[in-house]
Image 1 (cartoon, rainbow, N blue to C red):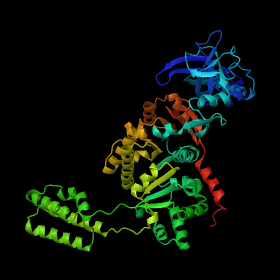
Image 2: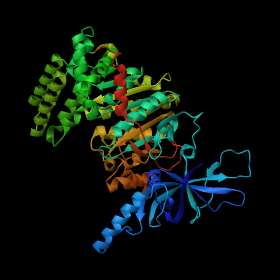
Image 3: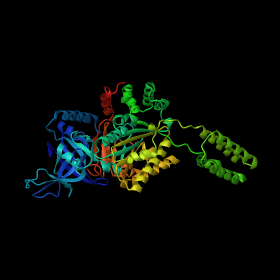
Image 4: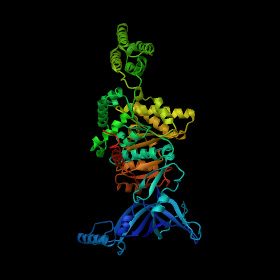
Length: 605
């Protein structure tokens, strides 16, 4: 249960507004101890609930570790000669104490927080082989020994509320301080009550998100549907293995301008090998790659070629509006400003025009007719300068819309919104849909349409499965604090709908961003599971702290994090409720390299 030959002493306890209590534990310094103790380590201290029969140990989580030397203290001020000599002596003391502490002047000072759990040990009950873990019943006693939990007990505590045999869980990572301790998440709670990934530039948000999605797609016992809105077009590379090998994985491109022209040529002539090769090359070049993958870009080509061979690249096109629908959409532009005495004539003209052409498509005939009607209006009514300018602009917009043509795309490569919703509601197998667009406004509007239609379809039918998560990368671009345009308002509204009411229909959201200050505060408060990395800006830390209740001591350990290290905090999905623990997750780029090695001999390039 405990690590042998490593015992500390609880020296201090004080109240804390975030974690209830803050503890200070001292260990005798040895090089062995300083390499064993780390943020995330758990120690057990006898508490006041114990008696002559039972021993109750409060479980504390270490959040800070610092070796101290009495001769130096924490202040280097003083006479330089004395301070330098003390520092040299301290340096010797650090080196000479390997496994045994021989100097009273050296200690390891640890800051710890309560896990709100305790271990109950009763030596009189012979048939109980493992100690009981339960909710903490009293405070640990200052002056008593602090024992470090071993790997087996730490893993048991870290996953306490999860039944790994029966629950649908995924293994998300390992403890930073002990790679032997695996940490798990409940799939249902992760998706239904939402998750968030927050970290500064370079923390690896996209890497973690792709790893999390892969875990859901490969380890969940029940079907899971993931739809990710990829603003930067970077998840094609980070999820390339799933896209190629998983039946339910697709890339959906919004509009023909999102892909290179060679892709459209290939889709319309799939028998031509040269068109396939060019499409794969151009599609690869238009995909954002991490630095490590960019160095071996040519090795990715066989996998990108396979995306087209397996029909993994789909296209979505908005239906071109009728003339009447387009007139209604730009009505405000025609009627804006001070139209003077001719306002009634212009309003009547627009109303009549919209009704007459409500069902007519754009072509040369309709364009000519409308141009003639605008000219006739100018002859009949005395138009103000503003009205004349508005009508001239109106005519130009009609001409631009009429010049747009719908590119021919094979039916097999076309996807519709009903088809996507059918896929999200299909209980057979996992689905991964990566949505990307050349136009951020179009991506936001599409997110709104898909989210609302999916929610309404399940609400009307009462459908609650399969679990589906709408993932917004660069979430501040979809759910801003201040929505300045229609597309922003639409995506923000649907995210809030899913966050507040999607749970009972098996729908959730995932948000990832580095710009927490720009994210809508109400939505930020919705996720029950957080992955947090370095957040240098104090405002960002305060925002997360107020949303989840994470203390500054907890945040301080993230400054030491390496790539792949995250502070996992969850009210529902993790085994340790509402207690952040530092975990390490796998590198998605290494996974892609392994995939490339695996397919190098499978697909002949």
